[in-house]
Image 1 (cartoon, helix red, strand yellow):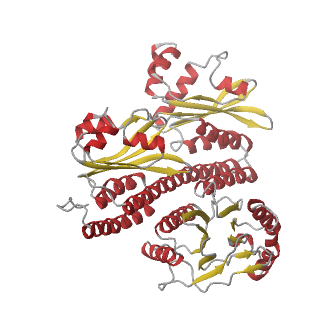
Image 2 (cartoon, helix red, strand yellow; image 1 turned 90 degrees about the horizontal axis):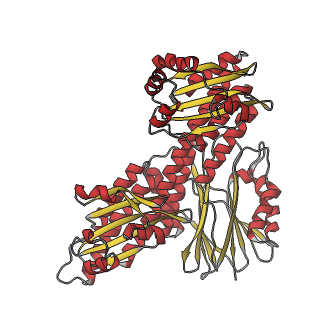
Image 3 (tube, helix red, strand yellow; image 1 turned 120 degrees about the horizontal axis):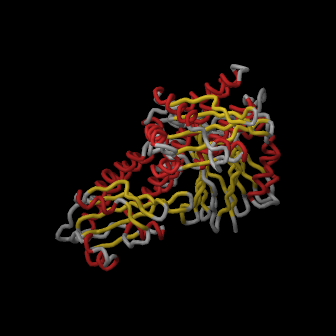
Length: 596
């Protein structure tokens, strides 16, 4: 941002400054949409976003329990950085206040800043303009962006609105990155389960297969893995694996020379008797001292560097046949309840020579969880529009590419879109999350379908996506009484009139995203009070060995079911009427109804 001139309110100068600022911010938005790591988001916010508006001090904070953790900070002396790294939310400062309130904060001038935060004299940095923006995701505030600009010149309302959009895009980036991290973690776990299942199925010798599973867990999930079995009422250590082979002997010696007390309320025997898992989140040296019977046992225990441990029972046919133990030597890997649940899955497979159906159920649950993590949990309408979506995952072990969203853009207008990324798996999940976030961001700036589809076409071309993406985008305008529909190779929506007439919008001639250089043709569809729109993905209509027109005709016959019901119920009735559980593709149907 330029330094204020002698005529700070000169309209021409302000217009030029705002134009330049918005151009820079638009480029930063594109960077946020494609950011693939937390570090990348931090750099974009504290440098590129700050530079776009002329901020010399920038901070990015995320909520961490009852604290705000500053994960990115620029523009203050290094000596001050430590004191702002972790701040209680009860302390009044711009970032904590915004995280608590969820509302944007703008302070112009040193006097306003001092008045707002009289207990923070150390933040006096002269005449400044402070803008702090909430990061909202999933109906909650997950953090804040703090920007401090030299001078006491208010930002233009357009700049502030654009900054709000960027903050939302930043929050979506964090959601997308978190979903990607969850995907990688789930993928690693599923791969381990699959490999363990193969190992279990490769031999009828339980001892051999369990030893193999013990080795598989190291070092991905544990530094030390042990498997104990119950034989003749006694606990026998059947397998031990350690990240350092030299320490296997120490682990064996620890067990053989100092066997656990049979009456102890903790340990492998206690877990085998109770059938309940045991978690020791953090093993302290005081615990080792208290549990050692002599100095030699304490020495070996310390040499093994025990930091965290979990023990889970091996269940099969309704009885416990042993115990699986994982131990971590890494202070940064302390087990939690989620790790316990995962270890229990592994233990069940090791105990029962897991069959394909059980593995299928676990991978399906993981895929559905990831799919829902990158899709909106709820869709909100307003006084003019009712909106509802019915999404059904395919049940396959890999995540699909269906995505959708709907939201108000003001002045009686509502945006609704639905799309499909070709393929399955983590790549499809990442692509659909990026496209949903990008579509929402572009629509927030200019909701016109031609503008949004044009931006998406350019984005797909610029980043060279090899995945085929179709999308139908609708801008519903209550004041104008019509829909503006842009379609990029997606199945055409249906309109249900108030008098129960059903109209299928014509197929668009436009190809999927990224395959058209010219502006896409739009359809204008009259849309009166009581009319309903149904958008959907191809999983709802496609069947094996059947032409797509047959599926569209089947859906057309079901659409009137929406007429005499609330929109959520109506959309559900339509999906139930046409769905085919034998067809393994995701299904999504998005309904939009104009209210009185």
